Amino acid sequence: MPSIFTKIINKEIPCYNIVENDRFIAFLDINPNAKGHTLCVPKQEIDKIFDMPEKLYLDLMQFSREVAIALEKTVPCKRIGMSVVGLEVAHVHVHLIPLNEMKEMTFLNKVTQSDSEFKALAKAIAAHLT
Ligand code: AMP
Image (cartoon, rainbow, N blue to C red; front, side):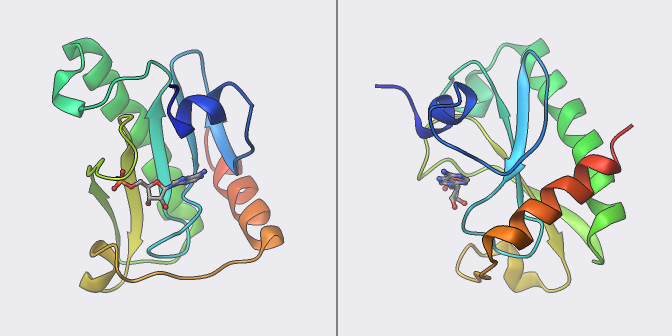
C-alpha cells in the first residue's frame, strides 16, 4: 500500500506544497511542532533513511539545506532544527523545524494554524527559494 506521502506526491491527497522537482518534494507538516515545520521527502518510497542509495541520500540533504535556508529567511527563529524519525510514516522524510526553544524538537509541542495561514506560509517560504 502506498504511503501517505506517496499519495501526496501523486496528488491524490492535498498538501501545503513549498517546492518540488523530479525527485523531491517539500511541504508543511500538517501537525507542526512550530510554525514553519517542513518535511522534505524523496519521491521514491523508501522506509528508512540509511537504506537510501548514497547519492539519493546526499541529494536529499542538499535539497533539505536549500529549503532550510529559505525557511530561516521566512520564519523568525534562532535556527532551523533537523531531525529524522519515521515512526509514524514509513517513507523517508527530513523534518525541518524553526526553533526558538528546545521543546520544539520534542514532537509533543504542537501549534495550530488555519488553512489560510498554512497556505500563506508555504507561499512565503517558496518565494525565498532561488
Ligand atoms: P514521523 O514519521 O514520526 O517522522 O512523523 C511523521 C510526520 O508526518 C508527523 O510530524 C506528521 O504530523 C506528518 N504528517 C502526517 N501526515 C501528513 C500529511 N498528510 N501532510 C503533512 N504532514 C503529515
